[in-house]
Amino acid sequence: MNEQPVQSRFIGITIEGLLRPCEIYPVEVTCGHGYVWEWSALERANRSERTFDMFFDCLEDARKHGYEPHFLDAQNAPDLAVVPVSAPA
Image (cartoon, rainbow, N blue to C red; front, side):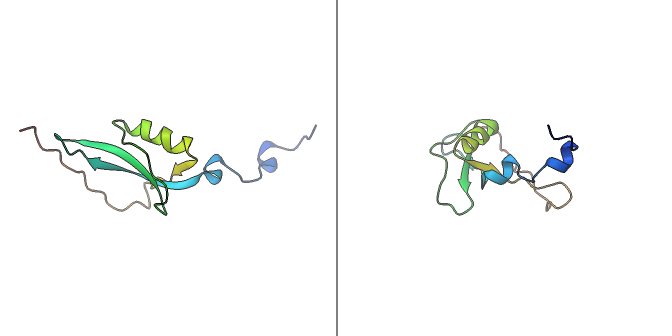
C-alpha cells in the first residue's frame, strides 16, 4: 500500500467542490408573522419546490438536489443587520 502521509495524497476535491453553489434565504410568510426558508441556484435556474419552516430542512433539500450554499466567513462578511420580527397583532 502507499505509505505517503494522508495530506500528500489529497487531490484537492471536496464535497463542496462537487456541488453547485446556491443561496438559502428567508421569505416572509403571507399569513401571520415570521419567515420560512427557500433555496435557489445562483443562476436562478433551479429553486426549491416548496418553502421550509426549518433552515436545516432547506439545507438538506438543496444538498439532495446537488447544491451547496456558500456561507460567508466571519472575516470577509459584510455587516448583516438582524431583521426585527414584530409582535403578533
